Image 1 (tube, helix red, strand yellow):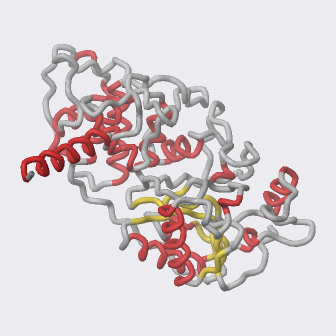
Image 2 (tube, helix red, strand yellow):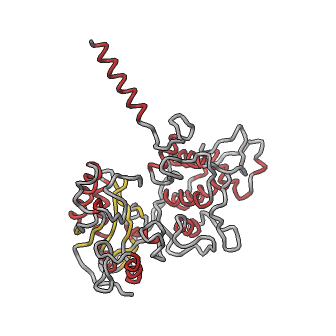
Image 3 (spheres, rainbow, N blue to C red):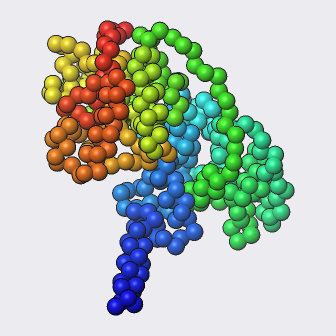
Length: 391
């Protein structure tokens, strides 16, 4: 009887292990050389699959993909100015990342005011982007990684990529292909996430930025100037919203400083519990509210600007959700701007985990001084009201 019990326990453990796949992608098995890297980078929210079930590991990395991964890795704080590239349209999924990459000298254009976002990235280009990112974010103590290159094809390496490649080989983040460096070969998605996975295992000292200035509570400020750890996916700056068109011409969310101070408390409380915040919307110009009303004239979901103003236009209202500390997805009742009953705070039609997470967010937001809107679980307003910003 004892042996039978031990056998059943062992069988349960083996069965559970077999079912607990490292990723949810059908084309990434648990024993691939890149599996752990895919699991790591997707859990951090740095890269996504080409579909819900496919990662496409052998697919080639484009310039748009490369800068977007690094942009998300760096916290996704957009540049305050557009990139100016003629082939980077407003509202594309890579627009904010390209502007960020240009502003921070991580990736420049290819000439003629063009970025060529769909062009493929070579191995030498990708590691050059990576170490430019490192120089932007960390104290420059990279000399410890410098290593001479002794590959048969070292002479094929471009002059501008030599330093980045020496650092990459010395740090162990890139290895040869069958003993060749292959600098001009295209970088696959599997290779890119593996390089980043190894890079993230290294130890660096973060650059210490000067603290932002103290301003009046009613001043409109950029949220991430005061909360760098907060994540942003400003949906109305992209086509990924119910209008399927960009509503905003900016990509960085703002709020009143008094509201931001309360949000700092929320972020601190959540991080102590292993979570973080992802912002979907903040201050909304009145002109943008008119555009939303034109598309959806339903006052249950969109404030009618002809009879009153959205609280978003006061700069004290925010739409947000929970993520993990590293920016990974957390189960919540619905996506942003879901017009079904799952959007409300009833929670009877969602999973227990989603309801629990939404209630945790609500509890902490209210504790910090916010008021929850009953029709949308993601929508909160500062208990302190401000006048509408009509400019």
